[in-house]
Length: 345
Ligand code: AQP
Image (cartoon, rainbow, N blue to C red; front, top):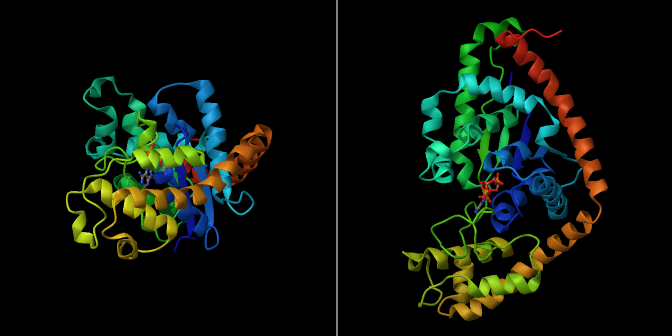
């Protein structure tokens, strides 16, 4: 039986959302609201993998919710909630820890990057991050996952986990009444759009990230016009100007990144940007980029600030979303318990 199309995605409340989160994921999330049933999560349990800061986590969870709403997510249309309020995520995450193989997790490049040289000091949670992510998606039997390019490998692991679960428990799944013997869908990554990998403004080889120690490396959704202009002005470039053709980007990651950001924000192709700006110096281009960035992000930042002034209203959105998410996740988790042999009364 084909699965009902359903979208799931999430972001970690580990700091301010930035332009990469916005162009790589959020813009797609907003679009998909008009075509799909959508579930958007603030994955607060994932944030624990990066260290503990209880007050900071509470604040960041509300900030990210405000940014979601300000960017155009509609809490009536979509389900918006924080992960820890739906315990089925953690329950299924544990089952998946027992389905996934160590060898699979050993290959995850994000763990290697985040753990750095001192692997032994990394938390078990950071290592098991992808199995919890698989649970986040599959506890809703979601079919589509809009994410940035960096999440591709984790999505492939989610697909492997779904397939292994379906294979390992085929007999039990059939006995539970699923006639085709398939319980979990294999979720499709939706990695589309002009900016699936936005790079740091200070180093074109590193992705823009919330946890980069340099605030100059990213444009936050809450930055005001002056800050955006300053960060773009200070963005790393090279001595050559804007090329007239794409091949002129060779070995010039920073230049390619800035032009890509301009194209994504104005919804035109990179070729068109090069036609308009080819041959010009970066100083002029950066002014134009600051204008479009301020125009687009200024409204979101302002609206997010307004929403953040009323935390009780944000908590209400999360409570409502959590209740709706629980109503979908609980029966799925009940089936999983029956399938794997966990008694429930
Ligand atoms: N630079 C980026 N370009 C395009 N998409 C990006 N995403 C993140 N950075 C970029 C996408 O945003 C979504 C949410 O990401 P996340 O919060 O779960 O964590 P992350 O991918 O690890 O993002 P950060 O900013 O780098 O956070 P930290 O520093 O806390 O680890 C995902 O869909 C991601 O692809």
